[in-house]
Image 1 (cartoon, rainbow, N blue to C red):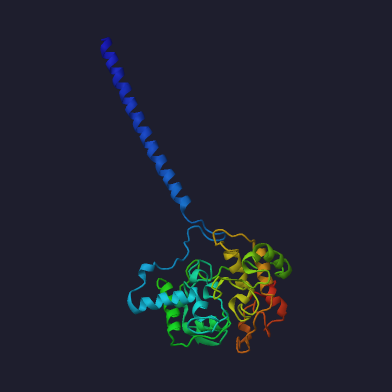
Image 2 (cartoon, rainbow, N blue to C red):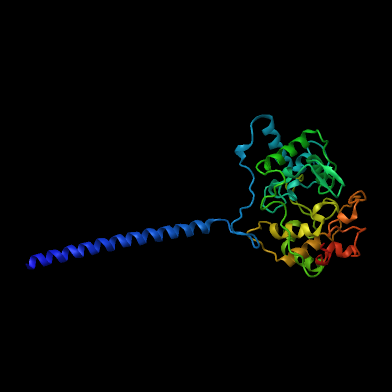
Length: 333
């Protein structure tokens, strides 16, 4: 009788232990799953301030998608022309001398592939299109020409030249996964919210000395590479820099460009300057002397001028000074 009771207790204990063991295993599995999820989430790219966490920014196509043959060779040559423009088309260029010595990627970072670095993600998908600046429908070739004439302060390659064909092929390849008229997240330049005051070049000068001088020089002259052909860091003003018709001469564009890309090493996930500092340093840089381009043919319909276009006449009563430095809020339509 006593033996039967002992055996029964043993069976109960064994059953309880088995249940407890199963419970521990289940809890362990759940804990592992939760931890794995947390690790996975912690390794996902963190969204920049103001960007929804679920959105993923544009990335260029894989290099394995570059085709073989003539087309692939053109794409690769185009990439080289964008990243090392001066080596081919600068003052000491191996093909011809037709630019100021900067590279296309000095404005279109990482050869036009960096998110929010003025990339080429949707450039090909946007053209041809009507542009109020020229009051005409422009082709991609025309857009490339404008970069040469303004940002590179030079002359454009012939429309049918090997160089124009290659740059166009490279830009088209970069945008090959973007649908017509689509603008992917991370494209172009991320704009900053307007300040309630004008951007201040004097404050910007102090920021420049602290954050920018070590790369771009005390006088904005940039830093030449050892080959004396290209720039390691481009000039931000002076005779070798972009002229006053370049897109980055507009403050709303340059401020966003600075915020999410400068100083060197910064990206949209890890900014260093505050919004106000970005506006002010952009105002300082664009207050310095640079080449002038005749823009009398631009913006024939002055009502279409952007609010930060720094040259009159205007369709409103705001001054040229305010159109250059702001505050821009009162000018919004």
